[in-house]
Image (cartoon, one colour):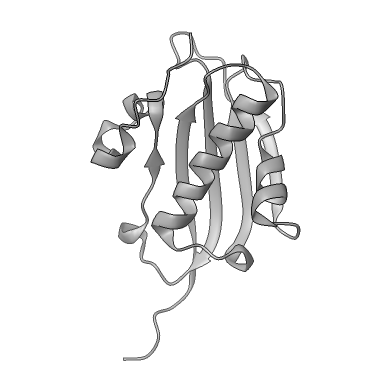
Length: 137
């Protein structure tokens, strides 16, 4: 048996942001992205692209700024957008979808849900995800 085959995989993550401010958006993005990277052993050159979305109530800054500024992802394709404005959806929510080249199998990928976003996928929430951070409004 040789080395595991490398494949493109998607890694999902979501968190809530305490306020619609530049600093709150960048802090929440950094925390979520760092956790996604750590849990899935992602190296910067393995990232093909990342899609950052926020609910419409978060517009004070582009979350993708964190990927370039804090993690040095200058060559990866990054995109920001807003989630669909579905009635009753979780407010103040930031989501990230990473596309990475990895030897991990699909069932080995760890998706990350932090802070108030743990309600989105309780089946994927671990004990460390209950950070007690404030949930927006």
